[in-house]
Image 1 (cartoon, one colour):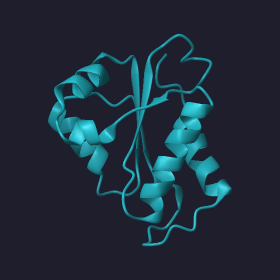
Image 2: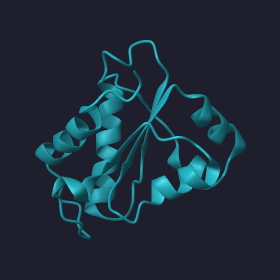
Image 3: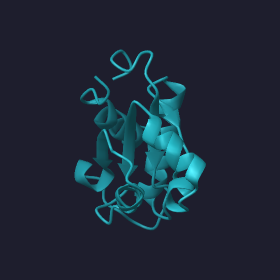
Image 4: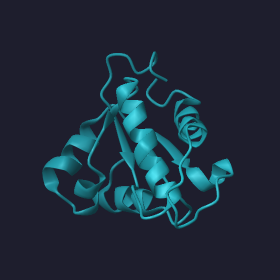
Length: 123
């Protein structure tokens, strides 16, 4: 993903919810930013309908959305604000069970990152 996104404005959004999978989304988004895949951007601004943040998100070349579970909070906020999703990952679809704990492993974080990078979203 990083090679096909070179020179493109890619934004990464995480649900950051109050469960292990919500926090996995957050950790994966941070890692993707550090790796140069895309810039971790403000999901709270999308959820809050903040015009400047929504506008910058609409102007991005690509958006990577990581939802923790099939409730799909980030996806719903994007749909409400009319922001396109280029790559969508749901962590529970990766076989990671949702629970109210924060025992995250490096292997889980890497699995989420790998899913986000699996196919080029900004080609």
